[in-house]
Length: 175
Image: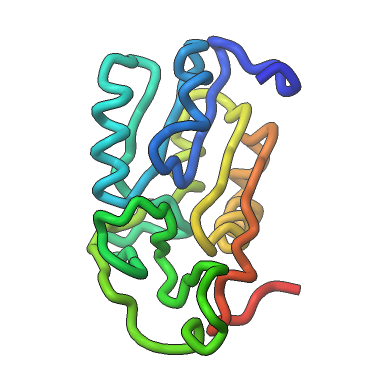
């Protein structure tokens, strides 16, 4: 917050909010926060946690490079597991698994969460985005490429993102 000089006039977009640890201080500061969390258990927790904040918008859907109402969210394990590792990409694994366990099989569960085009969402905001955080379990590079191609990246001052490329052994990654 201090380094980026974020304040009550700032706009923050958080993709993959989980349960909101990283947006709490921003919400308390009064910044305009747009949170995206497709996991139904976590998004319900977010709605309760931030129900008294007029400056926080909870989007219970995934942000991606397209609009797709039928997009599936894949889980390893049960939906109720408090792991934060669900992904729009089938094949997301955790680092605790053995390599042979990572190489195959269908996910144990999926949920139809849908997704929205984050470039369109950002372009529709009435102000520039001071901070975009992307932690979307594997689609970070796809989203970054889409923001560049669409020109929406020009409306974003700072981007922080997680790199989950090592978590996927079944799909190619950008070099």
